[in-house]
Each structure stands twice: as C-alpha cells, then as structure tokens.
Length: 202
Image 1: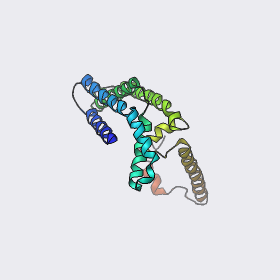
Image 2 (image 1 turned 30 degrees about the vertical axis):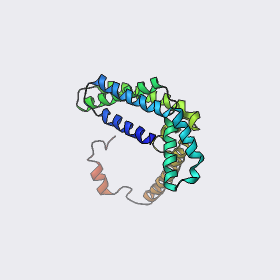
Image 3 (image 1 turned 45 degrees about the horizontal axis):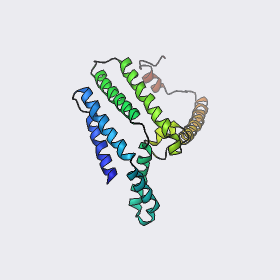
Image 4 (image 1 turned 90 degrees about the vertical axis):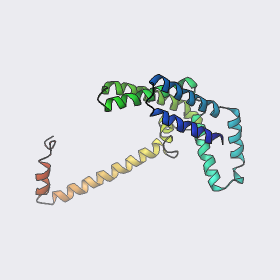
C-alpha cells in the first residue's frame, strides 16, 4: 500500500515535469513531492515492513514474490539519498528539460543545453556513486544501468560488445574474401547510386 502511494506521487511528479506553469513554482512542487517520497522510503516502518515480507515470502504466491522483489529493488535504489542531492538533481533535470524545449523551438543555444545536461550527468553520477556499496554493485555505472534493467551490468555489456566485435571481424573478413575473388568488387549499380550521395567522397 505504501509503495502504491509512492508510485502515485512519482506519477504526479512526471506530470509536473511537463507542466507549463511558472518555472520556480514547478521546481518547488516537484522538489516537495520528491522529498515526501524520500521521507516515506527512509522511514523505519517501511524498512521493517519490507524485511518482514522478505522473511516470510515463502507464504506468498509467485506473482506476489515478483512484486515484492520489484518493490525491494525500488526501495534499495531510493533509500538513503540526501534530500539536498535529490532536490538539486530534480532542479537540474527540470532546467535541462526546459532548455531542451526552448532549443527545439529555436530559442536556446546548444551550449546552454549541454551545460545543463552536464549538471544532470554530474549529479546522477554522484547519486549512483553513493549507492554502489548499498546495492552491492561493481561500480556507479552498474547502478545507473540497473535503473533501466535490474539484471544489466557493465560486465554483460562488455560481453555483448565483445561478441559483436568478433562477429563483425569475421563478417568483414568473409566479405573481403568474397570480393577478392570477384572481378567486380562492388556492383556497378551500387557504385552509381552511392556516387550520388553528398558524402560519398568523404
């Protein structure tokens, strides 16, 4: 029930991000709601309830256990973050979003957008670094990847790109071998088409 309310509050925060009201007022509202979420998550009542549920999950069905693990993952990711860091990150995100919207309308420079984005990245990195030990992650990058997929890690990403690299090296070698045995390395029709591309000579 508590995390249902937390999700409702977070849903309201997402709506406020798109609100066109006064900027300072919007930031204040979002920060207040995010602080409420943090206070709920950091309360002893929530910690005790989750510990109790995990200790007795044998009495739950598969669907309930899956929900419990999802709630626990959200709880562990949110707990213990300093309110001032949370507020600064909220403000940076709202500012960056507003600058991006203005840039899309032609009323803001790319430099200002990138400066705001750099603030978001910096604060997100700080928040992730604080959760490394708590989440048992290998690095802050694993923490950030885990926000999108709980099973995703930098190790798994490295393995994917290693496999892709091996595939493309083999593929390129086979292509070169096949072309070397052909009197026409590139089909004439393909050359005629690509010669018309504006970047064909680069």
